[in-house]
Length: 295
Ligand code: SIN
Image (cartoon, rainbow, N blue to C red; front, top):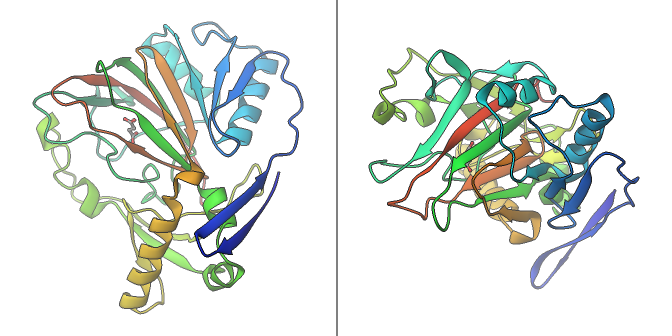
């Protein structure tokens, strides 16, 4: 996969050319855009998956950053088992979970909710020293309209930066802090706050451990500032990067139906959930796969 960026009068123009992917044998992969997102068909996640199917799902995720499945009737145990195919499971430091099942995070908003999960652009739990590699969201109850999730490629956002900006960001790190995000956030779910929440320092440009591609790794949700950079400069640079990475050119948008499932790679994609369906209910579970220390 090769890309380059050109900057003209109209802002960043991203030239993206996708290397021809080898054919898949056990699944069908229907890309939503050339840059990010694909629907996967021809697979039943309630049944044990062959090694070949698992390998092809890994490849589809690496090539598309987020993959979507429709009409999957899976139990909570099958959801958890699917997550375990990709690694150990991550337990969220703050969010509510199903009773006795810390690995099954609750994603729920209804007419009485003060907010919905993930309403701003973010990478899941980037405040962890080892942030989650991926998240697998299964939505069981959908509003009649709305409740889409947007995803953005941080590879594309990085590749579309000018060479000067890439050189400036090289070697920089940023602080990601859960304290201001999580304290009090889930009080409406009856969650009692912890004494402290995770905080970590990560590279601003992250290399994906599987694809070797570089992507931006700062987000509006958790990133508090660039390390070793004056505060006003840090705020200016981060503001620029956030506006840049929100260019629709780098995005896809997924319209949920009941029993759809999305699996996104937090190492190279950000996402944002739309809460445009009040007073309707949107509800499901997220299983999160553990990751490693960004480099
Ligand atoms: C999340 O950030 O995990 C929630 C995403 C969504 O509800 O679409």
